[in-house]
Length: 419
Length: 167
Image (cartoon, rainbow over all chains, first blue to last red; front, side):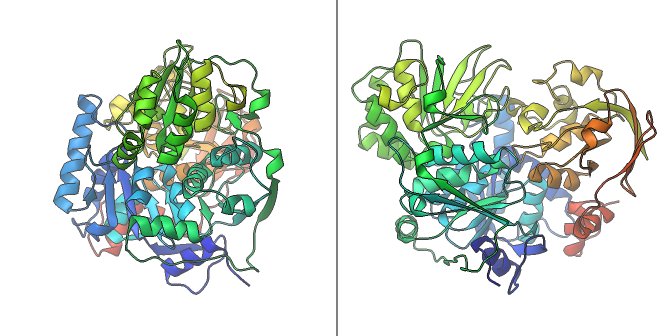
C-alpha cells in the first residue's frame, strides 16, 4: 500500500521504510526554529538537560526574534538579550533586528526550509513551510529544548485529509480566501491531529506565496501540518533562494486518506472570518455593514511581496478612509527593500498608511497597532481570538490583502469589486 | 489523588484566552498567574483555589504552541484539566511540563460548576463526588507513559544522553 507525502517524509526521517497513521516515531529533524518568546523558555529547559550543554548541530538551529521586536519594553529587551546571548554562545543561526524578518516569511526566503525536510518550530505557524513540500509543525519550548539537545523529535504519524480544489479562482479570490473557506468548512478542530494535503488544478495555479499562506493557517483547523506537492514553481522558488540540496517526495496513487474533500472553486468568494474564531467565516457578499478603525496588511500569513503588490495596486494614487489607521508590515528586510524599489512603500505612505519594520507586532497583541475598547480591525493575519490584538471588547476580522486594502479605502469591509 | 472543585469551561478555549499574547514575555510564574483567563473573566485569577480542577468542552487549548498556556494553569494550581479532547500542541505541552490532562468523550455535561471531582492519575478514573458517577479517561499512548514514568521529557532527554536524571 502506498504512502502520502507526509508519511514518506516522516518515514525517511525516522529511518523506516514505511509508517502508518497513529504510529509513534522518533525522527531526526533538519531544522529547529524558535522565536524569542519560545526560545527564552527553551533555554531554561535546555539548561536542565543533563548530559550536554551544547546544541546538537548549530547549523540546524535558527533563532529569530520577531514577536516583540524591536524591543517593545524593558521586559521584552531582557528576553531578547537572554536569547541573543544563548544564540551567540551556541553559534546557532540567528537573525538580529535589522536583519531578521517575521520567521515564517524569512525562513523560506533564506532557503532554510526546502522540499523533503522535517522542520519543527516553537511557534504554531511553523506549519507554513509545508507550502514547499516538506513536513513542518509547531511544538512547545520543551520539545524545542530537547530537539536542541538530541536533534530528534518524537511524533505521532498523522492521518492525511486530502483537499482537492477543482476549477479556477473567481476574481479577487486568493490563497487566503481558499484556506479561510476550508477552515470555515472544517471548523477549528476539523483537521485535528491530521495532515492537510492540498491538491487540484486550482492549487497548481497558485503562486508559492499563496501556498505558504494556505499552509500557514492549517493549524487554525487544528491540523498537525499542511502540505503541497512540489512542482516547477516550488523548484524555481527554492533555487532562487539557495543552492542547497532538497528531496522531492510525492504521494503514491494508492496512498490512504482518512478523508477526501472536493471543493469547487465556484463555491469560493473572497472570505472574511468574523470574531472570535478563524472558522467563523462568511463570503464577502454576506458581510453586511461593518465599519472599521484599523487595517493590518502583513504578517507571516500575508507579509510577502506578492501580498504588498496586491494591496498597493488598490491603494495606488488614493487616500484611505479618514477614520482608518492602516498599518503595512513587510515580512522581511528583503521584502521591505523590494517594496521600496517597486514604489509600493511610496504608494502606502502617500495613501496615509503606516509602513513598519518587519515584526509580528499587532498580530499577537504586542505592539505596532493595538486596539482600544470597541475597536474593529480587518487584518491579513491568521487568528482573531478574543482580546488577541488589544482590549477584550475589540474585534478582529481576518481577510486577504485585497479585502484589507479595499476596506482601508472604504472605512468598512468591502470587496475590491465595490470600489 | 487529585480532589477539588470543578470550574466549567466551554469549547475551543484558546491559548490567547488562557494567557494573552501581551503577557508572553513574562517568565515568572507568580506574575503570569495574575493574568490567567483574564480576557474571559478578569476575576478568575483572584477567585481560583489551587487544587481545583477544570472541566472543559472540546478542543481545549487550541491556537498557539506557547508552553506558557499549560504552564500558567499549573502555576495557578490547576490540579488537572478534563475535556472530551484537547488541541494537539496543548496536549503535548501539558504532558511535557507535567500538567495532568484527561480525555473523556462527553464528559462536559457530566459536571456542573462547583461540584466535587476526584481524579486518579494512575488509573485515569474520574469521579463526580457530588453525583457519585464514575468515568474512565482514555489511556495515554505507551510512549507518553514512558515519558511520564521518567518524570517528563527533559529527564527522558537526559537519560538518552547518558546524563544523570533530575530527582
